[in-house]
Length: 276
Image 1: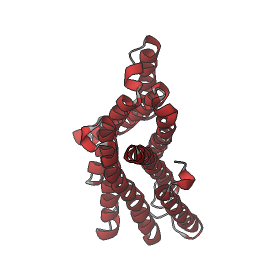
Image 2: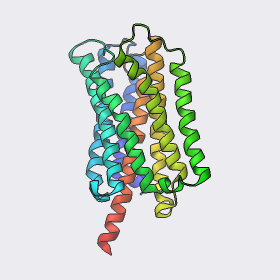
Image 3: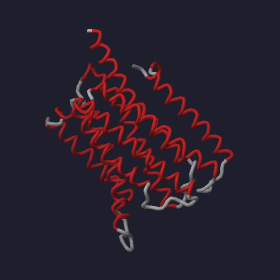
Image 4: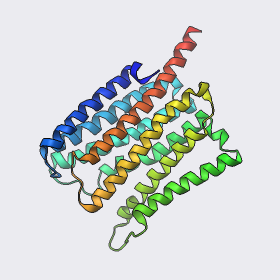
């Protein structure tokens, strides 16, 4: 089902446009202070609203794919749990800022959600690759080479951009693990979804491959948003309600749309089986 005909996708886009308007308002009237009240409220609501909306829809829609009994159902469930990790991270981040009125420490409870979503997303992509036929195609020589090169390039890029001059001096072990885990884990997820998209067979007449494209955009947007956050954090230029938050809003939108599109395919199949 096209986005413009899917009710949930329409709601997600309306929410996105609402938060876009809010962000533009902040851009002209808000402050660049990390703990600015207007900016904190925006940061608290856009992320929790978009991520929780996508999570609930994804988990409820998984039943149309057979839930945990099918590969596609597992993909939907695990991807939704990954998106819920974003909700946890955003909620905890805002709790520090708004309730405790302090800048979010690093590491913190927010990292439980932000970092915890990385393995769930990876597992969800693996399930998706099996359901879409990419897992079968990867056994071919050319496809296998592609599947090796893309992850190596993404991990290499992440290391070069963030970690090649990393100084371990007086850095706590947990902080170092997160500093390495974020860029490398996110880079690997981008590589996995690109490989899955490229190697997907003509499942359902190519319908699945078109839906996976939304997830490709979502993971690339997430990688760019986290890339920017790490950079701004290192430079001391990050503030709530800035362009960095808008990058996350875009990432959450496409992740939700990707999940909704997989839901629409499941609903269409479910209705066709009922009518048969």
